[in-house]
Picture 1 (cartoon, rainbow, N blue to C red):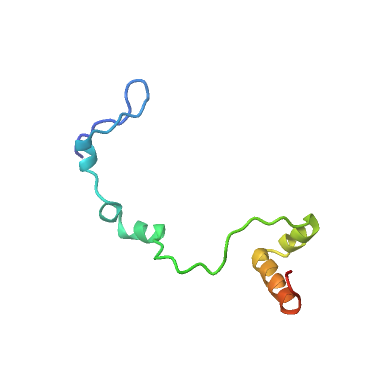
Picture 2: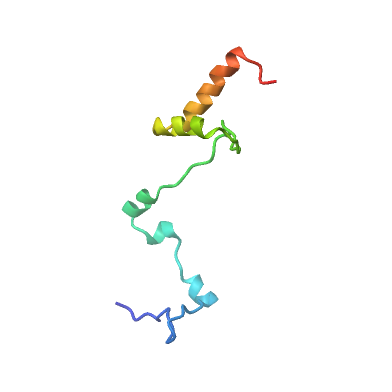
Length: 91
């Protein structure tokens, strides 16, 4: 194994890397094994968002009942509001 310069000084502080040392770094795609690269995963380009992130204040009872119903509770809130809009005007 080649001798390597320690990255920690005598005081236990991490040493700053020089630009020459940084230039020796390889991209993760070259340095990591393929099996690890697959585990890290890479997101593709984002599709047009179909939902909008907002902040909304709801009664504690409503939130607790939806949360108690398990995973996907926020989607069920959305579905309940969509169903309500079929027969009501939001105004």
